[in-house]
Image (cartoon, rainbow over the protein chains, first blue to last red):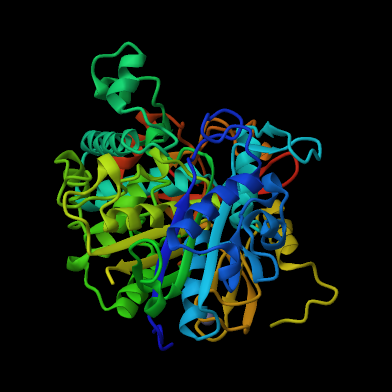
Length: 425
Length: 139
Ligand SMILES: [Zn+2]
């Protein structure tokens, strides 16, 4: 493949809702999915200085149609977003959805077909439509949520034979990492604590995050003076030894959106545009790795393609998000990309280097644990954060020096490795 | 690709084998590698030229952890939490499956981890509605 964008493409607007629970979280409580989507889309269109009628096409992402009951999302949302009569398609790449949408939009624009494309993702992982009601929702049980989510995982042989996300994504990867780098289980646990503490810190500085409580405050709430004691307590059980509950995703409802346009017209918009320098996408089925659980071939390919298209090197990256449904997996990916030294990611977490003010900042919105995970909307929330950081508009968690180059990696269950590279214009 | 008329589909064929303790795969006539569990196409080279094969069920357990205590699927409600492992099969494929012969406790799993790779043998677990492959520690 030629692996090149024939015209320069920019993100001219981004939007993202508060991630939380439509039935509980004050900022989004009782909103319909139509309104939740519209809130993200309005923010992105306003940011770009456009209306829904200014876009040429709409790529509408929603992964778990079981809970949304909104197939043909592009047309069902069109009257809520002002985009009627535009080209549209509903698509999903699970947790990579919005960034795969970004890649599709960039491809369409660089090919000369469309000038401006709206991409959005919307998801409810916490509740579902109640009794065919147009506006009432009811909570989804833990098991129901995983049954629907795992429909994106090998349905012939994986899920029917006991596939377990916590094992495959966390415990086995953790053991592979410790064995490979000679790290003790105790040091692993401490490193995972520090990583989670950093993500919680970022979440506490992000008014849109699902969890805005620091680890220290969570410990205090449970009557413990020490955050590490809280980490090792019954509040944080092993879900797949040696991986604990707080090294995982927290589920959320949410929506995100972005406007992509030709780079030569992007500057006429309202906000500072960011260029899409390149992307790479590679999918694989279970098992996601061979003998070494830390090496994922699909990620290697996605990273290689994104680096090749964008012409950047690891040393150019100023901000990185890697998919962190599983914290240990996210560190393996950061090492694979070359952002962190092999085997040193846990040390980097302990030394505070992964904080917004560290020298290797990662996932400053709080990541999938603190910002939360709303499947099809999440990759867009990662891109949203990168764009804010690059513009110097990330508020309390703003990196001291806005990054020139950002890389965002996501895993679309299961498993679509997606890497996008953003750069200043 | 083989004609499929009159034969069970590949997925049914795999589970019918499993219920009899036979571990079915497909083998590529072009690159010689196995696809396990079977499909109608080689997962390594994309060739459609694959034939039915059986695996020995012998393997090496590389790493073992445990599942969540709440089963993510109703089929495993009685079994969860269970030990879940990363296995290299004698014929080459990598598999992940339920492990028998250890408890899903940090103590047992730590002992297994410190021991390093150990031999395992595939067995069939008959769940209420479906046979499921598991691997038994061989010591
Ligand atoms: Zn082959």
